[in-house]
Image 1 (cartoon, rainbow, N blue to C red):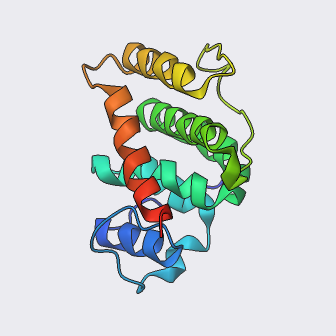
Image 2 (cartoon, one colour; image 1 turned 180 degrees about the vertical axis):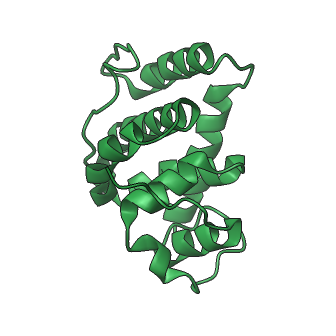
Length: 162
């Protein structure tokens, strides 16, 4: 098993997202296109970042680049438990937002609901609430995950409206 290089600086990660057209973070510059070459490394670095805003950028990354979903399961297996949970939950948020906005034709596979022990309905909003509750249980934190997910959705949608 090859180790993932996740030693990138915050500005390099923001630059890589910017180069990919993910306009989720302020301050990204198109200087670090090399970082998006190995998608698994970018995904892992974001999931393990000490910066909440960088971790949260996983959601719009998968929505803007659904082709990155093909790396998500393999990458998740290589992460320590906290980063793995972040990746699994944020990817699942992206999946639910893709379902919420079918007109955008974003197709993401459902990879983690069994591992997270979740059962979703056909209503993405209700499923987001279910995921937020489960995320809180698994992370043993007092974070309002639903508000966190909604923030990512708002910022991402703002970037979609021209």
